[in-house]
Length: 250
Image (cartoon, rainbow, N blue to C red; front, side, top):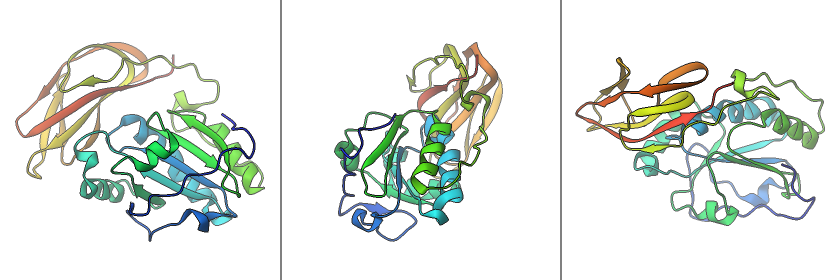
């Protein structure tokens, strides 16, 4: 969604915020380049599905001047632990800047409402566009190229439901804890954490899934948006914080 031209300035980064994989960045030092800010959580399926695009924008356009910053604001106990966030950033191979918003300071400055959420600022650090949730990747790609003054580069969808104009279903809302029951979704995920740094396991619809670290794990994946019934068994040594659902193409 395009913002009113030149009306909203980028909020400053909290002075005491930790940066995971870069030296401390100052907002005033970003003037003169477009800046893409994305709020995410490594324990949220929607954030993991968007990450491939965020990473691609950095790889494609950093040399042309784009600054990509992922702001991590965790909603679950493991994703509120800075050490576990750092481990996840390394495990996921994230090379662009990651800021830890442990106390949700920047989240509140943005009056943010969702994971993921992305905000694209122009060279004067004025809000150019924003988007909540998955999707609109093609639009963001066009906007980045516009701000950089370069020819549009085609963006290949990572999944059928990400293609422009794709019709997707409405997934079942997130359920707390080790939930089982009927659902509608393209995929079912669980936020899991093993105890005492040991690899645990869960069973979902008869399939065993190893849990070597805290994170969001795909339990069931469909080719299209489908109705199904989840039967989740969580063994000793694993904590399940929530079951999540993501959309599929209709």
